[in-house]
Picture 1 (cartoon, each protein chain N blue to C red):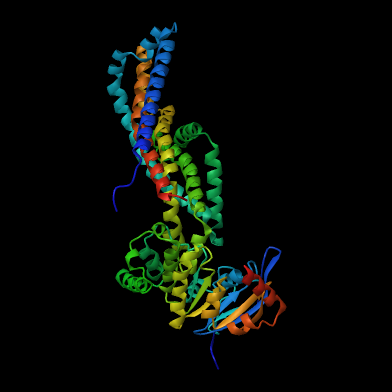
Picture 2: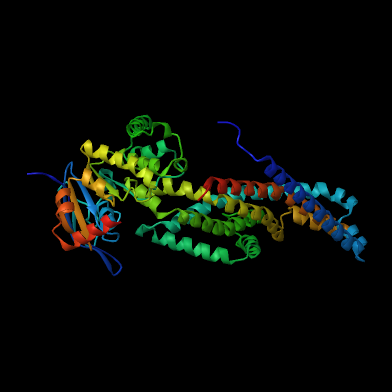
Length: 277
Length: 247
């Protein structure tokens, strides 16, 4: 053993190149920002925009209300997400089943994904949020918040089930053959061999859908519940200032950025694990 | 009379319109090592997959132990597969499980063995084939030869009566072939019944009790290795052997 042999001249060259690259990147960034700032600040409408959207006073005033409304977005997300995962997994497994007796369920699952992937989420929120309460049923709730959340679950469930299905199909058939040849039943093969591999593979794309869902909780505002976007709308209609929208935007970003970084991290780790292949 | 552990009777199998097996027959006695040789595409792998029930046959009959019809459309294949182990060319270890878990999964879930008991037997098998220090490793940290040995151990953990080896050294680097063939040698020495498809002619000659030359979906010629290799009767066998020797 011993220290790895490195040619000092070669090492210096590599270091010099790294320093030069960093310098070029910094200068390029500064120049780019400077040009953007000058262009925006010199446009004739800038003072108005600054006052209407980036008003420090209005920001401070609306922040507490929008923040507390944002808590509703978080709660919708926290309730919807596990429901989506469970629904999607059931749908994906049903669609992948082969038993003849399950044919009706397979048909329902296929119909479900076809329909709910096809309807824009906002339209689904409107249909359920206004449609179900109009039934005036004694058995089911009229609460728009509930039906808005259900709409999100149904819409995302259809998408996420396709993600699961893709993951299941990405597991090579030879894995199934190997498991079956050991005497494992079809169900045991799915549970112990196929699903664990499939789920590991779909975690990064799933996180992507979660990020999307965090933002789409704002769609529930169209049927009434006062979440961050609706609160910002209310605030701005009182003050004729749009800064509350920027407040809401900042809150959404604050929630999604860590999630995005986490998804990136998982993607990188998955790529490293796959190694050379 | 000697008991037939496996008997394949006049089996036909086609993929779409391409016939692969055209009325193949094969009898295997307990403790016998039968080596299938033949060109790629001659039907060796397909035959092994049919014996294990991984492929359904179109006509004929496959019997295990003269009593259980493997090829019956309503056969309990899970039960059949518990008695017949198969190892593939591509090792097909489960990448999300450690070596130990790969080996103990089927004994625990299929046979209902207790975890401690299954792990104890697994450790014994791994030790027997020089894999003790790999029990906690994941498959992607092993060499091809090690992976294939684990795959064999995984099949043996179900305590099968018959082992099928489907070109188990074809995906290996030449310097790793030896360690896998050693395992087969060891098994044959301990009396395991083996049906093996291979291109390793030297090994086939050494370990086989009987060589079956498979050509165009039938057994064209069979007999002890000296007879088939040194004095082939059939024209096709001579052709095949001269081609493999010049390679």
